[in-house]
Length: 194
Ligand code: SF4
Image (cartoon, rainbow, N blue to C red):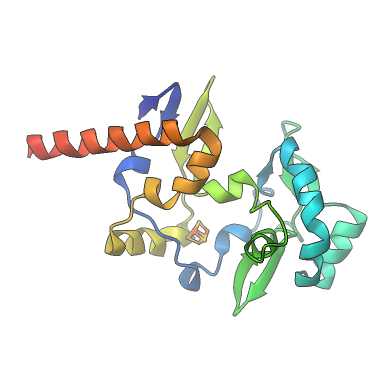
């Protein structure tokens, strides 16, 4: 682990490779049974509210009914917000394309109908933001993500590069540049040792 501007970081985020391969995992992170829904920030609620009219046509009847009667937010154990799920499995915003689970929020964002891509926690996954008195970025892939590590190795794309956009969304460009500098220094000193 190492620190960049008081953010504690799992070394694997710098050293490991990763590129999602959804034709193999089938979008498993949106449909895993148990464990609660994706963490949601209070500030994201009004942004999702604006996307709702556009996502509804992509959702199945069950999701539409849940959204109408329960809404999409749940309170987690520590009173934090989570996104509601169907039968403790699929995220309520999931739709399927060729049997791959996809995010309807991202779909309407990509279509230019909204300005909100998806919750930060989903955008960052498999990086999780844990709290150890400050932020700790932890790399926590599911078993279903294994092909993504292999694909990342094949393409030689690091976790920090693959998740550049959400990392900048979270901490900004300057912080991300510092992360890159750390990675380059680590790679250089590793080369020197060898
Ligand atoms: S994070 Fe893992 S489960 Fe989710 S899309 Fe990527 S490889 Fe698949």
